Amino acid sequence: MTENPDDATALAGGPVAAGEHGYSAHKENYAKRLRRIEGQVRGIARMIDEDKYCIDILTQISAVNSALQSVALGLLDEHLNHCVTHAVASGGAEADAKLAEASAAIARLVRS
Image 1 (cartoon, rainbow, N blue to C red):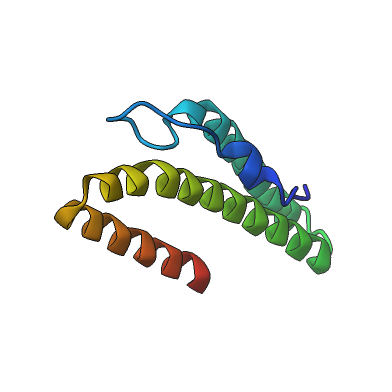
Image 2 (image 1 turned 90 degrees about the horizontal axis):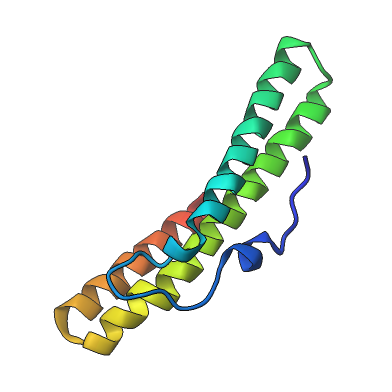
């Protein structure tokens, strides 16, 4: 259940039509990845039920954390490349709001 650090790049993609979310073109990829993570979490619960070795459980928890971080970075990249870029191109208060929102999201990710 280890994680590939390049998954964020694989999940992120090219341009999306206006009015859609940045991740819309890759929605199924994100959904598949999250289902895989969900399976990993169920596997961890099973490991606890089966009294597996602590370090093995912690290793799997680390893999899940890495997988979630990868999804988060992919979504952040999509948001910056789509939502924030469109807002900045429009300018004004919307641009300021999207930049502040992105900055807050980055801060939450850094703290987690």
